[in-house]
Image 1: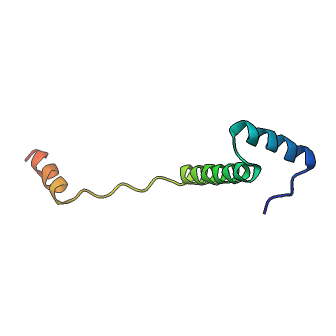
Image 2 (image 1 turned 135 degrees about the horizontal axis):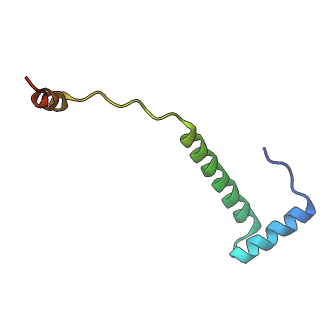
Image 3 (image 1 turned 180 degrees about the vertical axis):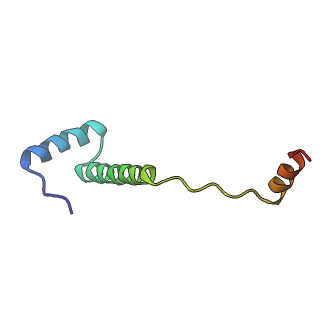
Amino acid sequence: MTKPMTEGQRAYETKRAAKAGMSLDKWLDLKAREAQEEARAREEAAKPPAPPKPPGFFGRMLDKLHKPI
């Protein structure tokens, strides 16, 4: 849950929302949604990469064909 905003913060966000042509509620919802997306992207980037898949049937056959006898 977020902390309640002070009067100064509310006035600042109201000005920014008016500049963007939105209501304060829409502006705050947009900011919250963007923060969630950013956190999700950071979390996704922090995950280790998946291990590579083993070669399939045709990949194994091509590897065998390319090896010298």
